Image (tube, rainbow, N blue to C red; front, side, top):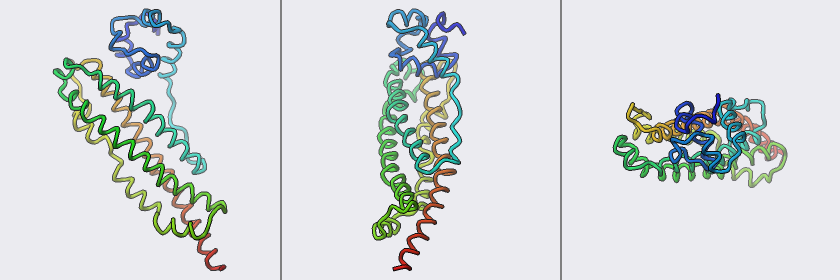
Length: 247
């Protein structure tokens, strides 16, 4: 594709992901809708080839790596990195898009105004949830893993396991799995029409993409992390039981 001759709106209509690529180069597509990519790069002093390389990379994003064979601490680091990307990149970008929705967009798409009010609240709740997850679930699993490797104080370990369990965390996790239900409801499952503006379409596509990220994230936790953690917890209980019997 000869990217440089396309207008910015034409690029975004071909692939909404291009909007986020341009955003990270400091190009807010709705401010340059009728400019060609070549014109924008020249105006902003950007390397045309660097921008094009990033656009092409965005079209070749790979699948989630196979984590099944990896140790639990590596899986947790992967999940924590995903949290970082959500909080520092994905959510601020979507929030910026939503904040940029104008009165014109709101008049043709009533959910636009609701999103301006609801999305900041969603972000606040979401960030609280993932920090809590890191401080409780991830911390507990890592301490169990340390105990499995012989690094533990019997009294502290016993007290910790009396107050926590992987099964309890898993049940709580199920309750939070559909965090996007409210957003889906507001946007009528991200429904658009011929009159829907390009900006609203990009917002909806990004929300859908984020929801897909969350589904994948939850699947890794439910199908890989929790089963591994349950096995570790079971082994640590045996170790603790043997330690008590020896004494």
